[in-house]
Structures are given as structure tokens and as C-alpha cells.
Amino acid sequence: MSDKNLLTSSYDFFLPKKLIATHPAFPRDSAKLLVYNRKTDVVSHVKFSDLEAFIPKECALIFNDTKVIKARLFGKKLSGGKIELLINRALNAHDVNVYIRGKVKIGTRVLFDCNEKLTLHVKEVLDDGSRIVNFYSNDKLLRFEEILPIIDKIGHIPLPPYIQREDNKNDEIEYQSVFAKEEGAVAAPTASLHFTKEQHKRVCQKYPHAYVTLHVGSGTFKPVECEVITQHPMHSEYYDISDSAKQLIDSEIPILSVGTTSTRTIEFYARNKGEQKGEANLFLHPNNKPLRVNHLLTNFHLPKSTLLMLVASFIGLQKAQELYKIAIENEYRFYSYGDAMLIL
Image 1 (cartoon, helix red, strand yellow):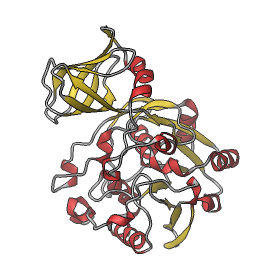
Image 2 (cartoon, rainbow, N blue to C red):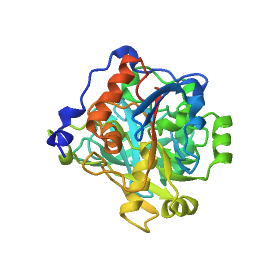
Image 3 (cartoon, rainbow, N blue to C red):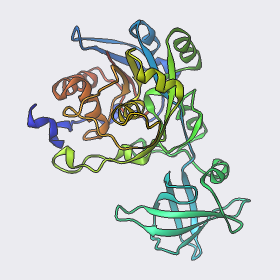
């Protein structure tokens, strides 16, 4: 293996701003799909609606059924100062890890404008700048699941920072997969966004399939900042593998993983047999290749991101660089609302 595999600079590239997708394709399956076959070394350019023509006959699909919550909130301190908050993840029943824009210290209280008289108390300030907080309604300490219906009324869909626009009502539908079920993500599993209800139903009727849950955290957007990628502190995310998914993973059938989040979940399980739920912090890269996933459906990712490194774990650094160059030349749309790639 070349040392280039481990250099963060190897995963950098220039992307013209016009190729950053700020709105979803409509309909969903009209997005472009780049198909790369590793056996034949052939690249095909099709539409996502053509996906079924490329899925191998002997194959099972595993989807991530996490649901994005309205994790972006606006409130004010008792002093009147405005704050913007992004929920990152629940740490336990009551403690929530958040990012807050604005000066807040331990003991700060934040008020939110809603009938439930929702307030936030800052409990701890962490080294990475995030905070551990508790939420209250009418001075009653809330469990995380009790917060969700309240923020569903007052919160905003947490669009990725590079989209650079305010969220709207359309995002509440489009920044969510058609099979989203388990609330808890603050970022969408974006490969899933391309499926229409009809296409998802067709694929599920034709192929064995199952669902895992990985609640995607904001760390998914964090670029690798150290010179050597293995020095990067990989973020941790809650996962839960259904019994039907466990059965497929434990079988011999080839697996097509829908998205990097499903892949991280499956591969974490493959390295920690028997643990169907917990915290996954697996970092896949060319020197740490997949053990169980055979095929990958994914979007086009940020430079120097762990997601691009995950793609390279399937096809190698050089081929990943080559395919991204082809995608840019062919004006594929990048990132969360962008186009897709299928690796066979």
C-alpha cells in the first residue's frame, strides 16, 4: 500500500461551486447515476431510475431507516441575547449534545418560543466546543423522546452548511428518505434520498432487503484536518441492527449497502459480532477495507471527508480520484442533494 492512502491531502480536490447541489432533483429518481463495475473497469452514465438494471441478480439490499429531526433551533438567553442551536445527538435519556452559536457558559438558560415553555440548561462545555444540555418543559426535565414532538413544531430541518440557504417546507419532505422511520438523525443518509416510493417498493419486491438504523450526526460533515488520516478522531453514532438485517449480514448472500451510513453499520457489526445495537465509530479507508459489504450506492462527497475515504476503501485511492474527475467533467451534482454513484 502506498503512503498516499493515508495522506489527507490525497483526498482533496477542486469542485466548481456550480456543481454543489442546493436543491434536490425532481422527481427524486431523475438524478444522474454513475455506475462503476470493478470487474470490467467500465463506467456507465445513466439515471437513478435505471438502478434496477444494474443491481446484481444475487444480491440483498440494506437501507438505513433513520429519520432526520428538526434539529436546528432558535432561542434567546435570559439576558435577551439570541442564540442558534444544533442538536447533535442524545447521549442518554436526558443529556443532549448540542452546538450553540453564541456565547453560553455552564448554567446558562435558553428560552424557546412555544406553548410548552421549552427551556434549555447548559450542563457542561466540552473541549470540541459542543455543550451537554438538558431540556425542560414547564420546569419538568424532559427525556429525549419527549423533546422530539416539541422541536417538530418549532425547529428547522438542519440542512448541511454548504447548501447556504434557509430551509423551507419542501426540505421537510425532500431531505428525508421515503422509508425514514426512526427519529434521531441530524443529517440525512443521502444515497437513500433518490428513491421514490414506487422505485423503493419495486426493488424491495424483487430483492431480499432489510433495515438498519444509524442516527447520522453532524460529525459526518467534519473534514479530516490532521495530515495523516488515521490520526483523525472518528465520530461515534448510535446504531441498531434489526433481526432481519442481522440474518442477511450473517448469511453468504452478497450485500448492496444503500449509503455510507448503512455501510458503517454493517461493517462495524462484522467486526463486533453479536452487537446489534450500540455506538459505531468505524473509519473505513484504503488500508481498512470492507469485510462484508460487496456493493455500494452512495453520493459524491466533500473533499478530505471520511466519506470519500470510505469510497476509496472499496475501489482504491487512485480509482476514487479518477471517478471524481470523471464526475466533475460530466457535471454531476455533488453532496447531499446531488447525484449518485453505484460501485459494483
